[in-house]
Length: 117
Length: 326
View 1 (cartoon, rainbow over the protein chains, first blue to last red):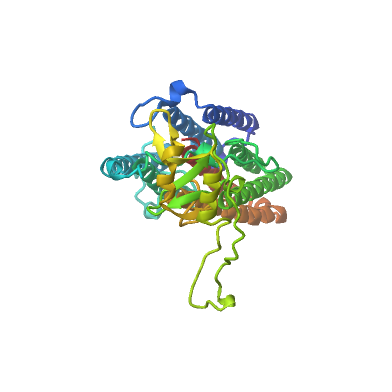
View 2 (view 1 turned 45 degrees about the vertical axis):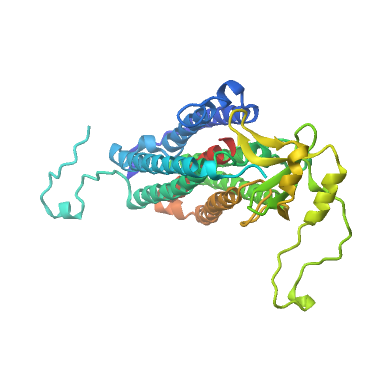
């Protein structure tokens, strides 16, 4: 059983992680409302820098939730890899295919859409 | 580095041996793999959303213009504040959940009870917030016209801000009512009538020289919707088929039908997860009060529902990003 670990309280760590998650969320909301032009009106990797920043911040949040709230940090390496790598590979694969296809459909259908009447 | 070779050759090897390669109890391990499969399901949904969004990259609704409502602040344009509040509620209920797990490790029954209760309350606040958000989304604010080919036309004032149909449409006091079987029309089926007819909206448009229309088309440079000059607007409006107020699965006033469909489906599926989480939390909460886990000697059950609850929070983090921010 997992109860051979010391039963010390992690309360301090939990509040620290909460602080980090809150700060990231506040930054996200601020950027989402303000949408600074130098990030928003750019083109990079099929989207803009602001969106990429949002994705990076989201992954950071996901890391903190999985590692410290779900205690992935305390699990054995085998379990951690079985869960995390599986998810990372499959999701990256699926997302890549779907987004490429979506872009292709737009390339084909976009010019056919009528915007003048 | 731990090496997991089978050193035992006695019968216990065939029962799994003493190696415990994953080092977790059966229940916890299965919860992790359930979460993994559920994460893949949500990725499928969000991936489909991404595909559709790329497909309609030229005409997708701008989330900031759709989710602008906060309860009790009617008419105040406050994009994202409400959904940010919902995010905080969920993150905070995650904190109380992990505090409950932490207290469980120390066998402090009262603390576990208290934190579980806070978690349940947080879940309920989130669920009611989502209900309100759905109500606002379904009810709509401005109203729009749908053209014969399905495109949505919205109305804007001189400054380019969207205006509501009720601000300019001219009521013709039509006596047209919804056709129902109670009125003898058992052979036809009709949806609820929109607040105005197409003709009433067109009359209002003609009577107000200051207003014009905008199409769904996004200017990819400025990332704004295209405003059609008033001189050209009637060519669009002559194609109008129906008045749209709010959203349903077939049509919505915000733009692409798929936008509302994905909104209902993804936030609905997530909301259903939150609902199940609250129900499971309540069951475990009562078990904690009854002392089930105190007698069992460990609070691993709280840990397992905790995993599920954090996962719900984790999914929301992604839904928040892809639906509201990007």
